[in-house]
Image (cartoon, rainbow, N blue to C red; front, side):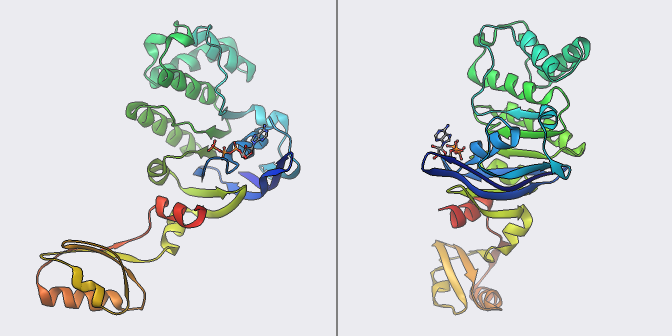
Length: 293
Ligand SMILES: Nc1ncnc2c1ncn2[C@@H]1O[C@H](COP(=O)(O)OP(=O)(O)OP(=O)(O)O)[C@@H](O)[C@H]1O
């Protein structure tokens, strides 16, 4: 497990990361979200030791993280930092060797990851000859190929097409099944929702929500989506409910008083057919808007 404890970082008069505390448990995907400038990249850089801390600490397996631990982590930095003129395969082998792999396993791992990411035929191309999305795939391979014990990925999905996103998701799920803690930042909240076990939401350098995605969603307001035969405007007159939206025969309501939804269902069936009556928990995007706006 990776534990982030009270991390703080200032740049001049700006406190970019302000007492940030959260866990990244083994075998779980933890999504790290927040608006532009919220402090995600700064936090990840401190976790990886590429940026000094002004306060707090990072623990790995219960002890303060060491440079040796960090060398065994996989990191995809925000600044992508590969060499444009170098051949893809040479670059990956070099990076794997830097991480302590022997030349033969390094080459085998590089070839396997390029294959998995759909770049098997591009191994001997120079990086600059690849499209930006394919360069991003090489960056993914670079972060994963040395069998890292933890993964810290800054916007790993940005610039990837849907097929590459699927390959990336498969690779991450494999790592997680092998008990690796994964922390990744993203602005793609639908992906975060589909993928993550846990969520950390940062705003203005502080954690404003953290926990299991399911727990965060179930703590949100309980809503019901209702689809009737005819116009649903009458739901506005019912007590015990807050009407979020009405659009023709569709209504989205929030239960304010216990039993409010039962009164709605009774009235709806009295009036005609009810085609849908579904409890809806807030999506990750709703939670985000609520706490980070
Ligand atoms: N090297 C630096 N020098 C000065 N200020 C910095 C530096 N790095 C980050 N900051 C500031 O720290 C704050 C947090 O930036 P950070 O890049 O960590 O946010 P982020 O959540 O990753 O944003 P984004 O989603 O836009 O990438 C911002 O106000 C940024 O301007």
